[in-house]
Length: 117
Length: 112
Image (cartoon, rainbow over all chains, first blue to last red; front, side, top):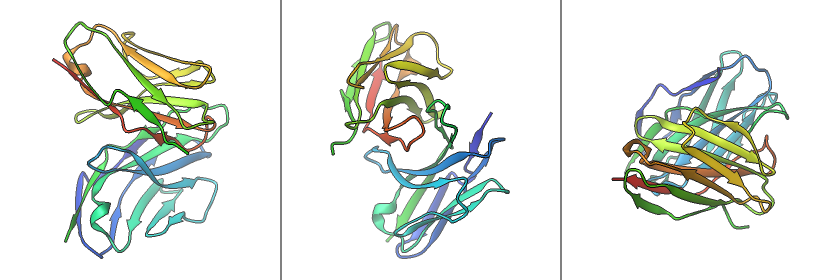
């Protein structure tokens, strides 16, 4: 069964600095998607970034970028120029890519990020 | 385009009662998934519906059920509530079964 691990339950970063959140996953599939979701204290889950496993290029979205290492099954999130609004719980998530797959997303336990002014 | 909406946002029930939660997906999205979020267990998959058919169900007892209507709106029902059912219930929709999921704000259920 697929699993997603986030080894850092809590992290903190100074405003304007850079922080990297770690995620590893276990799967025997070759076609899959990886996601980072952000859940601020208001509880609305928001998609931060998405990576298709077949793409070698790392995804980027403004200040957010990933380091996708398929062989190592690692998918870390880098937040540059951290802002107070980045404070949230961050979830790493995995989903199979086969078109016949049911739409089940497996989430990691989350990393709580604090931003220090 | 309006996002995923969930109603009600908060519910307080007592043990033994039943509850129905509603989810309206983003317009055009046909896949709706439900998750239970608790501090101890994190996010756990409940079930997923695509075009009115339940395609998969997580490891939850039969007290948890759901359905999807022809307009893609979905409901989940929990019967004979237990204290352990207290949680945030999240609904997510996607355009296709393999597309990115977009989440609603959740329904906070408290069982007394």
